[in-house]
Length: 170
Image 1 (cartoon, rainbow, N blue to C red):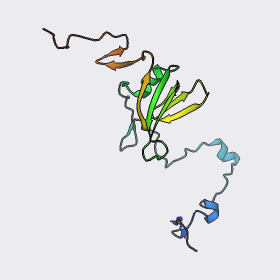
Image 2 (cartoon, one colour):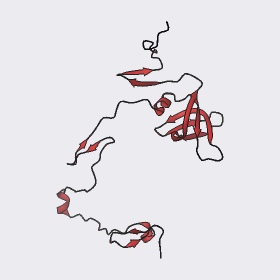
Image 3 (cartoon, rainbow, N blue to C red):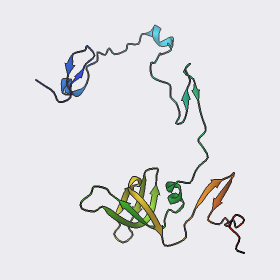
């Protein structure tokens, strides 16, 4: 009998996912507790890798070096979060789609994440979970709330536009 996805089991024999219902058979003996062993704690040794926070580094000795994340930057997800509750028109492109290559969604911004936008159409009540990988651009019919860190300060939509670097008109 041949299998679509063969693998070698622990003993080195060929098997398949249907072998023992798709699970490896591992012998197990239930731990027993005696009055003597219950009173003496034993340090358990684990071969699991150490837990490392996102962005951290593991040193050769097994220690962790935790690095601070960079200063928050201006990303579409952050701009959309600042504009939750506003109506937006989202323009998306879906390549290799014969039925609709480009699609426009209009709705209230409910949430935004690193890779998605959630809109609610106020007329139909339909909720849309849109992947930002397909995002072209977004328009608003009202001013956009916007802020981002820049040279130690924070730029917002209330920050005056500097004219000191503008070319002079003489």
